[in-house]
Amino acid sequence: MKTIEIPIEKLMLDPNNYRLRGEQSYKYVEDKNVTNVMVQRRVLKMLKGENSANIKDLLDSFKENGYLKIDNIIVREVEKKNVYVVVEGNRRVATLKVLKELYDDGMEIGRLDPEIFCNIESVLYDVNDKDYEILMGLRHVSGIKEWGDYEQSELISNLARKHKMSPKDISESLGISTQKVKRRLNTYYALEIFRNDSDYGEYFVPNKLSAIFYEIMGKLEIREQWLQWNTELNTFTNKENMRRLFSWLVPYENESGEMLDPIITKRDEIRVLAKFIMDEEALDKLEDSRSIGVALEESQVYSKEGFKNSLKQITKILSKLNLGTLTELTDEDKKTINEILEKMESQKDLIKKLIQ
Image (tube, rainbow, N blue to C red; front, side, top):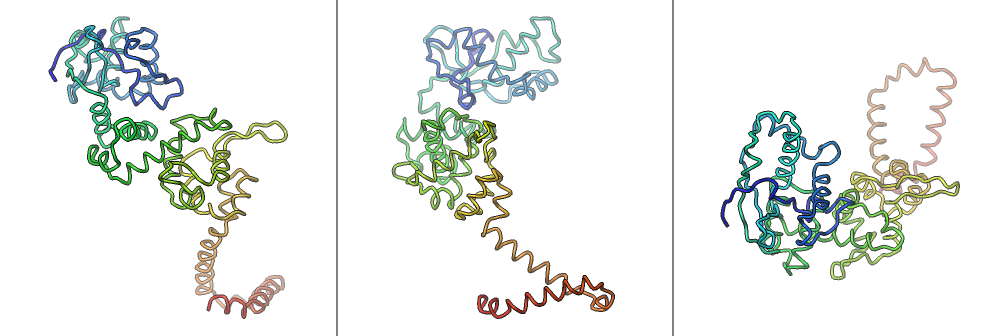
């Protein structure tokens, strides 16, 4: 491992960067094709995002403060061609490439010294696959700049599958809990099941679904009870419920030919779903209404909580009731009160029996 200075045109963005693997346009690129101009353009476009939104923070910082060497840019040489792939620091290098384009076009680049484009200090690292995975995990799973759910889950699955590391080994290497490692692994396996499904796989969008599946695999009532996850086979054994869940995650065409949005579109809705996942009537209501909120209101489980809250409200109202106002009620009000009293009287013995 040594420090070298590299001109920006010799620095290749990593097309297999984990940060990109959740993108729909991501494709695996072999080393021999890394320097391809079209490959590099595609990678830069993905790293930048729409209107450079993904690197705006760095663009603003470099223009305002210049290039501050806070973290090393780590590179590896490509087939001894005096060309280097960025292992760590792709966002920073992408930002510098954008700023160089601006500079070459005669645009302002603020306080950034254009000399940086000629000599970017980098650390040349002779890294094997396993070391690379662990380095990325330390930086972006347990480190200061976390990746999204999909990228974290895929990296951990690679450590488990390719490098035969146990959850305990991964936990110790990355400095995260074994429980989190297992949840990440389960998330990736579940995403693979969805992606490979003949009916639903076409709707596989990693960055959109990964957060939802991460939440699913963290809810015991959904994962264990309803979907019956098998930890040895890494699959759902209740296939009927699995496919029912998948149907809630994709668009639906009704009898009129109208395309409706998925029932579940974000991870927060999984937390709500967990409250009534074992209530079949509520699930039927979910599919009829295509609304998590409506199903929650119909749920027996939720109704129990609602009943408790109603009791609290009734107690509160009765404690503040001014009996003197009863003499001022209209005949209609008095009729309503009598109906309430009659209902309570008729149910009194049954209620006492149930709560004993």
